[in-house]
Length: 194
Image 1 (cartoon, rainbow, N blue to C red):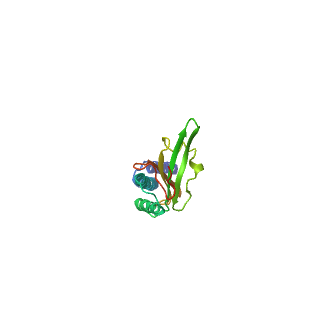
Image 2 (image 1 turned 90 degrees about the vertical axis):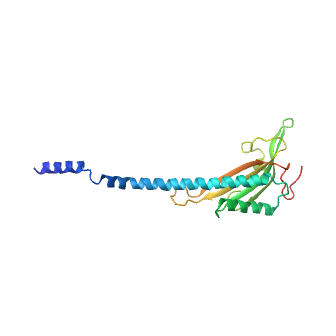
Image 3 (image 1 turned 90 degrees about the horizontal axis):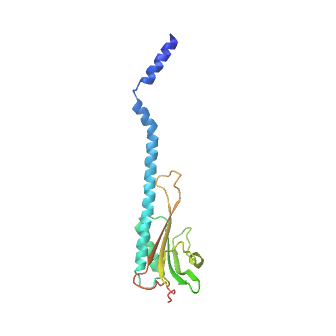
């Protein structure tokens, strides 16, 4: 009789549906919370990148319209503008460079020349060198012989709002190419030769 009673109690326990919603909530709540946290973090990461892409485009557009000689304070102000457009005080790095393309199939010349490159901000990014750009055909767009190209690049580190360990110190890099609109070249202090 004791055995039948145990089996009967077990059947009644497993067929009882009282409290199933509470149990399901307890099981599913952690997954829902983790999903919301990750959704928010990825949204913030893409928002962070989007702000920098827009600011990089704006600085490149401003430089492409410039007809006067660029000086140090101009580059400093471009960095200040970039920082204010991104709306935070992160350690943004801004690199502004001008690259000229040379091609002469008869002479076997097909390379880029670094006209000038300036950096503002602290971090892993450095000013470009001639060796960096000379054969960088996979980096730069198609250009015509003698054409100058303004290259504006940014690097910053994304710090997650909710630290989850998976997206700590994510580097965000943006790059924008712009051809000159009104001048044949964009001069920087003493670098302004035909």
